[in-house]
Amino acid sequence: MRPLTTKQLQVLESIHKHQAETGLSPTLQELGATLEVNRVTVYGHVQALLEKGFLENLEPGASRGLDFTDEGLAALRKTERPTRHAAEFGTKQPLAVPKKWPAGPIIPLVGRIAAGAAIEAIENRNDVALGEFLRTGESTYMLEVLGDSMIQAHIQSGDYVIVQKDQSPQKGDIVVAILEDETATLKRFFPQADGTYILQPANDALQPIYCDTLEVRGVVSGVIRRY
Image (cartoon, rainbow, N blue to C red; front, side):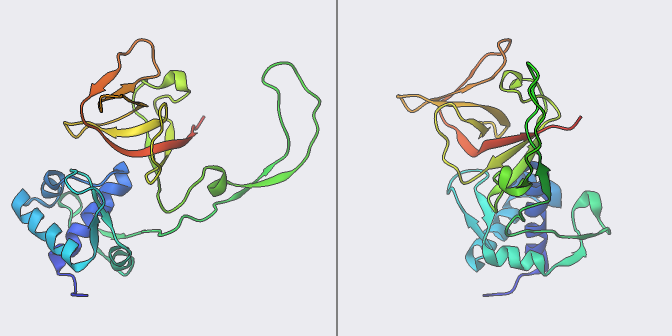
């Protein structure tokens, strides 16, 4: 495999940073804005990274279809160097690129507690690995929720949703959807017989979104809330 140039490594770092912060791959326009270069320049670097095998295009033609190959992840793991993002120039930041999520901490599950009528307090301890409980894996990512469109699905602003990016959406699933204007939203997924889609909020005060085309970037499998 041909080696990475310095600029190509900067592109990989920028894609990784964007994925870590948003759970999505950046568009070429977003990459260009981060690196302060034009879209044509970024396109050339991305094409070189695809040809060298450090990136793959999971959804050709989609604006956010880029992802890392095993070789691309390995290249990032070897790298601990000053980042070149415009907002962080000169800082030192190690890159954490887990290929496989660990099982996570073990927490004792000691029984059940009533939220209605009281029940007898009986302790029956089992251990739960959070990684398995939340179904985390190498295709899992997390997003912070902003807004109240899913409150009737018990997802509120400030919660964190666990998303499986390799899971095919089924009717009624809560999904991360990318609209035609490249904005992202969290809604229930309803494909229609004519090939269009309805994204349904879980809030009676809001209207559904009707889409001719849609890009689904993951299915929600869990919710985390802090108190």
